[in-house]
Image (tube, helix red, strand yellow):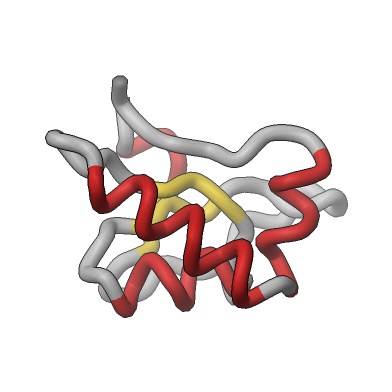
Length: 80
């Protein structure tokens, strides 16, 4: 597995819902490999993932914008 991305309604929920974002990030961290988390830059999911030391990958927003890279967010094409 090269990355983890919440799907469908969960993807939209973890943008703003800190409780579900924390649960999702904890589930990724609990795995053996802890792959990067793909999502929207400045989301609750990225905040939760950063707190756990997970790498984050900024995906495209509905407008097609890719969030700026920072110390844990990288452009999606670098994750392959």
